[in-house]
Length: 192
Image 1 (cartoon, rainbow, N blue to C red):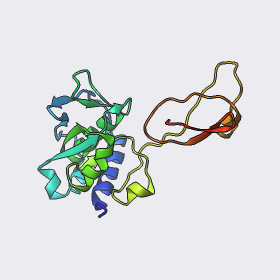
Image 2: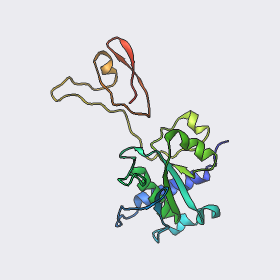
Image 3: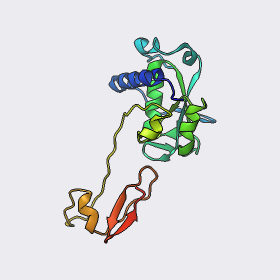
Image 4: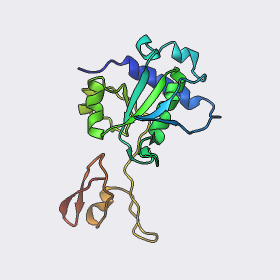
């Protein structure tokens, strides 16, 4: 069963408003036993707050993030507080919506099932929007990252991924996407 689209539309609107608002506050957050807390501050946008469904006005919005992917999401030095771009954005959305937010550390593979079964209200963890994932949840694409590579200074000019097909390469281990690359005439699986 696909989750309803109203929360996504509301969050997209709140993210847009949060991104366009003035920034005079601090970026610190208060820690709770389960993650990052954010109170419903007086900076709520009344027009956005009116759109928040009643069941969310009186509860804390639970946001899941896999805090193993800095700078997007990572744990603070206390080992409990989720920090990073996604946690900051979640707290900003909560402020604009006028609701409390609790960003919780969760394993990446548990976030979408947790959304589907109601454990989490929102997942913010550097997801790639795929057709398979869209069968279960809706996406708001607020950040797009591409594939990156670099060469030594005064090294060969490489202008595309296709140009790498005849060159030796090393790749950073990661967990998000796994394109197939050719290396010295044989297939090599990259985990970057």
